Image (cartoon, rainbow, N blue to C red; front, side, top):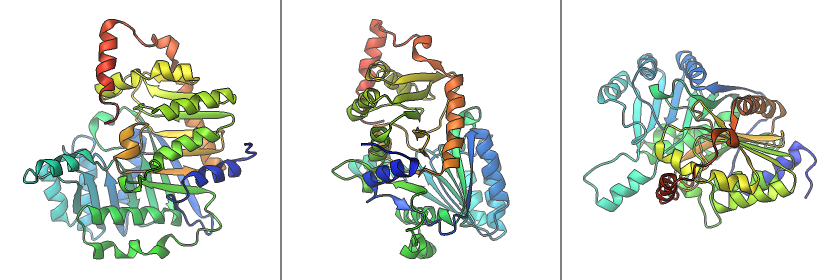
Length: 395
């Protein structure tokens, strides 16, 4: 199966998941974008967008903490809500567990609405409590004045201040499907449907015929996981399966399934260069040990592994210099089957080129697997690997 150009590749990838993707109206091709590849760069851009908002701020975020990093965001959100800007925030009850009650009270007193996804209540039955604890909203989507969107991997918490990460800003009517996704999440989190009715109308995302080849927003939810597999899993697998020259992946947490490793082997036989960029040590020890158990298998399948000394929280891939994805999803079963996730999948030539420049810079900075010592094989390491694998289906 030959694919001569980016549009062809993109069309075939889209057909893998076309029943599930939220396609975007780009009637006038009137949109702009900006990538941010460090947490602090993304924070500064998001903060400035909040300060200049005139109409509305809708924010769906996994981790929002009022620490040294988050306090200025809380102050800005309070100021905007007090001035009459509509502020609605959906935080994950577990990811934002560190958000203080005082900060929540300040936001609500200022006029902001704060919703918690799967809020935990000890009064529920044990099965119901575990079910809500298990399912998390991992999205990071900030919407300003219905025209500006930020999405990617960036949370708001001080420990992330020195990290690499990937966040994407898009400006224009193309962000409308994200408004609809936010409205649905708002209602699921207990919000009044009447408050977001205008975003739930199908016409919001109408007019798809001319520009649907450029970009798709992937709004992933456990409800989109069908018997044939999850939406996100199909996107990742489909992109790797269709690669003809190169496939580059950046992810902080790496727990591939058997099919992904098989696709790496097939890609290798086609002559595809598969590069996987990871942080040498993640911020979660369990994920560090668990990811390490797959290094040898991945290398034997045919991929080249590269490790950054600095923590990298970015989640993205690039295919043949023709298509790319940036989002909140890790290469783990949890992201594919359990979490709420969001991302942008695109083949705009400029966007792919800019993403590739970031990935190439990281790859050049990173160290190959052989130079970081490979996989230790002592009895202690083997035991830790065995223990970590017991959790591979739950992370």
